[in-house]
Image (cartoon, rainbow over all chains, first blue to last red; front, top):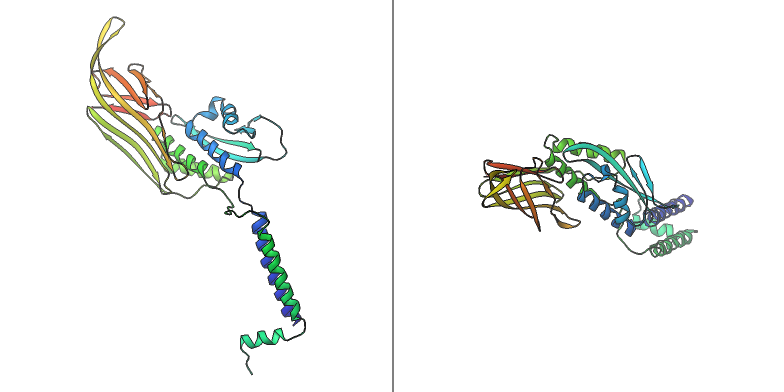
Length: 110
Length: 211
C-alpha cells in the first residue's frame, strides 16, 4: 500500500509541477513584444537601405520610444541605461538590388 | 481468483492510510485551482511569430524583384541561415512569383510574390498615353511622349491586411521628365523615339513603360 501511495503522490506532484511551470514560467509575451514587433516591421517595410545610411538609430528612437540601444552590425548606439532589456533582431538582406546582409539588434525596455 | 479494477479500488479505499491519498488529491486540486488565479487568463505563446516575420518575407520578395540575379530560393536560404544564427523564429514557407506586362498606349504590369502563409508583395503600375509635346534642350527641340503613370506597392499579411505604399521613382538616365502628382500618380515624358522607357523606384525595382 505504501508503494501505491507513493505512486499516487508522485503523479499528483508531477501534474501540479507541469501545470505550475506552464502557467507561471511560460508567460505569454507582454504587450511591448507586439508593439515593438510591429514598429520594427514598419521600418523594414519602409526602407531597404535604412541600416546602411547611418540614420537607423534616429528612426528606431522615433518608432520605439522604449528603445535602450541599437546594434547595427556591431555599431552600437545607446539611448539610455536600463537593467532589464529584451532584444529584438531584424535582418536586412540588402538594398537596391545589392546583397549586403545586416543583422540589427534593438534592445527594448519592457 | 481475479479482481476487477473496481474491486481493487474498493479494496484500496478500505485500507488504512488511504484517507491520506484522498487528502493529497484534494490538496493538489485546490493548489491547481489556486494557481489558475495567479495570472490573468490569456492565450499562451512560447514564441511570437508576427509582423516582423511577414515584413522579412516581403523584404526578400522586394529584393528579388529589384535584382533577379538573386533568386528567391537563395535569398530565403540566406534569410533562414541568418535567422537560425540569431535565434529569429521564421515559419517554413513556399512561394510563387509572377511578372506580367501588357504593353500598349494603355498598359499595365506587376511584380507579384505570394507566400503560402498569405503574405504577399506586389508592385503594380499602369500607364496611359496623353500626347506629344516638344521640349527645348539647350536650343535643340525634341519631340517627347507624355504619359500618366500610376505606381504603388501592396504589402499584404494576415497581421495587418494590406498596406499600400507609393515609392519614389527616378530616371537614372536623366532624360525623362518626371513629376509626382500624389496618390501614386506621376506625369512622365520621354523622347518619342523610344518605344519603351525604364524608371527605377527607390527600392531598385525597374518600372517600364512599353508601347
